[in-house]
Image 1 (cartoon, helix red, strand yellow):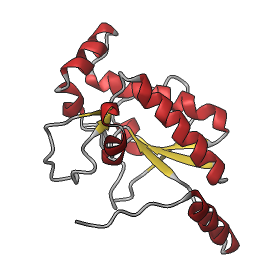
Image 2: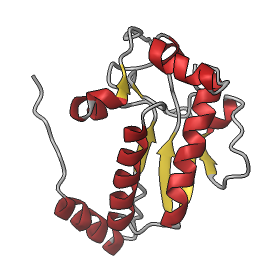
Image 3: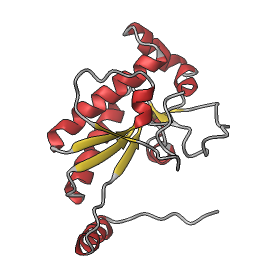
Amino acid sequence: RLPVYAYRESDLLRLVREAKLRGIRVVPEVDVPAHSLSWAKAFPEAVVKCGHAESAAQSPEDIPALNPSKELVFDLITQVLSRVAKIFPDPFLHLGADEVRLPCWEEDKALMAWARERGLSARQLFNYFETRVLDLAKPLNKTVVLWQGALSSGANFKGREFTASSGGGGGGGGPPV
């Protein structure tokens, strides 16, 4: 079993301070809704349990996705983003939005019933989730960055402002599949 590592707030503040002294910017990434295994360990009710645990392109840590039907998810994201924004002064905040395994959402009957009540497919559910997260980030006065894959999915974020970044061939940036 691998050891678990966690950074205290004081560690992160020191990292940012030391980086600034060296002319380095630290841009945090809170990659949601996928890459949520750590969220599942702390808040299992916030994550969709996925039977699609095998994927050539993703590790098991990348497969779970947050559950857009749970207000708890958006409460948690608000708390995390607020804390991250205070620790990292950079004007950019990366919110990921890549590599969402839509079959995970589709196999969750309760989530898809919730989505159907709102006229949403799994792909539209991704758009709903990201739109909500962009709205949560707006009061932080940061320029939000999303992976290019969020746009490759055909998502329409209805006039919300953000910057897209490419994976550059080194991973990241894959669209919801």
